[in-house]
Length: 220
Image 1 (tube, helix red, strand yellow):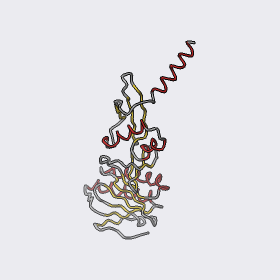
Image 2: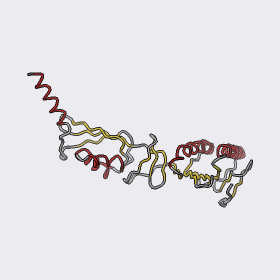
Image 3: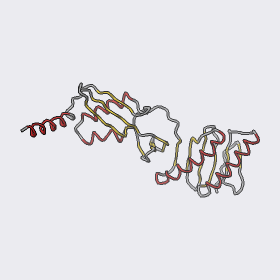
Image 4: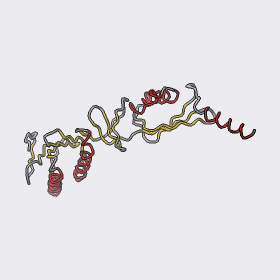
């Protein structure tokens, strides 16, 4: 009899954990610095916890920064909610973001300003575009700048813009070779002590670099 009583108690306890009321106090805990707007996020989390409709419960993972929710009910009847957010590494077209886990998300909430690289290209080529952008960043590190926009705009043409407003033109097929040429050019400027960040640099010429104050229109 004691075994049956204990078994009934365990079932009742397990069910009571989810038979919560929307009037119960909730303590939100976030794992990192928050990206989301809490005024709009926390009501969504509460709705997620107390809503019994499966389709509605999934909405928070498709239209917000939330990637993980874990809720526990304390002895004082307070619900402690642990929340983790996606960590973005790039902005994509149509207000989408690429995360550290490789997912593409479309959060609807207003967020704080993030210093992220903007990548323009098809979703199928995001992997190598991100790889190219990192290689470009390694070169820009020589002069303390960073990649702001990395765009594959068709016709084998890649255009990069840094935080100083300088634009660089590459061909996709010869990107690595052209990038080495850019690295040599920047090192030359650093050694000479003369760097001009307000310009366009075209590396699509073979064994040459074209530098101008006006945008290059040449296509190779």
